[in-house]
Every structure is written in C-alpha cells, then in structure tokens.
Length: 116
Image (tube, rainbow, N blue to C red; front, side, top):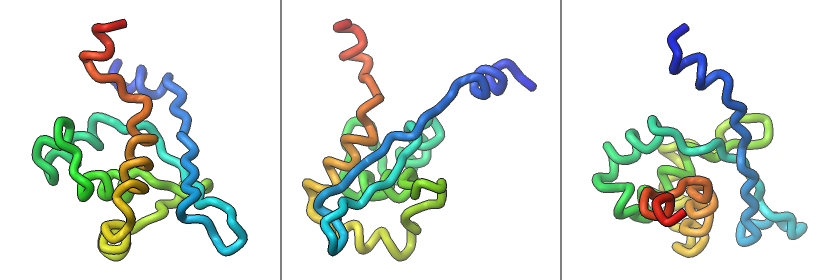
C-alpha cells in the first residue's frame, strides 16, 4: 500500500446530515439525507462537466453535486443522474443553493485560510 493510500485509510470520514424542511413529507417530517465530504475527485469530475465550477458554481453544477453526493442513511444513492436531474432542476433555486452550501460547509477557501 502506498503512503497516500495508507494516510487516506487512517482518516475517519463522517457524513454530514442534511435536512431539507421544504421537501417535507405529508406528516411534516423534513427530507433527510447524508453526504460525505467533497473530495478532489468530486471537484475534478464537476469541473470537467461545469467549467470553472469552483469560481462559478451554477445551479446545474449544484444539482449535479447533490446527485453525486446525496445518500440515504444506509449509504444508497438518493438520486439518479438521468431521471432525477430534470426534477431537481425544477426545484426552487434557494433550496438547491442552501443544500449545496451545506455540502460545501467544510471547505475553506485559500483566502479564508490565510486570514486565520
């Protein structure tokens, strides 16, 4: 095993719980899903599809991020790229932006890091 693989294996990665009140069920329970931290591979894949994703995250890119990362509690994917993308693109922009913001919450920009 290479050093990078060993170091990655040592890191315990917890999933973020994301609750979406606007997508509540008929009983008023919010839709809840989980997302693992965004990896370099995720960023690269999104940037290939959405040029300049890091500096200009479009709503389409945010939807693709949600599809890529959203999991049920058991780890199964919540959404499929083909069917659910069109449905998510029809969602209110503020909901999509809020979810993507929660998914990006752990990422600190270089500028913010330098201020600390």
